Image (tube, rainbow, N blue to C red; front, side):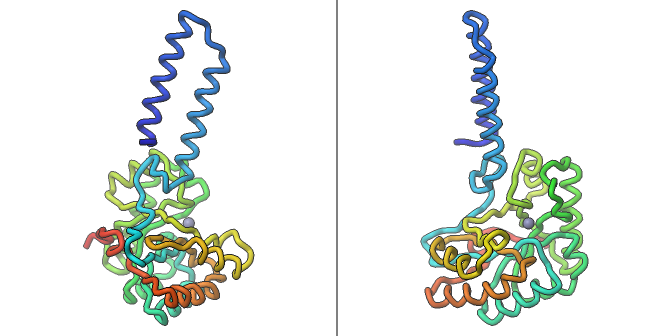
Length: 258
Ligand SMILES: [Zn+2]
C-alpha cells in the first residue's frame, strides 16, 4: 500500500542498497539525486492528494450502493452567505455539514447556533485557515483545533469530532494531531470548484456530469455565488431522486463528543 511509512521504508532501503553497491562499483551522484527527487515528488503528491490517504486516512466518499450524497461547506460561517444557504437547504429539507473556521465562528455565534438548530453538522477547519497552516508545528496545529473546538462547544454545547484539513493538504504533523485528538478527517470525492470556475452554468453542468452515488461534495459557504448555485443543484438532485444524506449516517461515524 502506497503510504508515508511504506514509502520511507522502500526509499531508505533503496538508498542503503545503492550506497552498498557504490562501495564496490561507483554509482553516479545523479542516481542518488534521482532517488531523492522521486521521494520528494511522492511526498508532495501525498500532501496534496487527500484521497490518496498517504499520511492519514480521510473519509472521502460513502457507499455507492445507496443513491445518496453528502453536502459539505467549508470556510464559513459567513455573515451574508451562510444564512441564505441555510434558507435554501431548509426549503429542500436537505442537511449539510459545515466545516467552520474558528475565527469566523467566534464572530458569528448566532449562525453557528442556527446551523446546529436546523439539524446540520459542524466540523472544524482550523482556527485561522492560515495559508501556511501545513507548516505549523504540532503544538500550533493542536491549539488551532482545540481553540475551534472550544468556540463550538461554548456556542452549541457539543464537542466536534470532524476535521477537514485546510486546502485538503495533509502531512505527518497534521496526521499526528488528528490521531492524538481522535478526530475523523473528512475529505471529498467531488469538488464543486466554486473557488476557481468562473461560469455558474458550466460549474453546475460539470457537477451534474461528475456526480455519482456516494459522493461527498465540497462547496464553500464563503462564496456568494453558491446562493445561485445551491438551489439549482438541489432541485436537480430532487429530480434525479438522489437523496442528500447526513454525514453521520452516511459514514456511520460519531460526529460529536457530548
Ligand atoms: Zn478551506
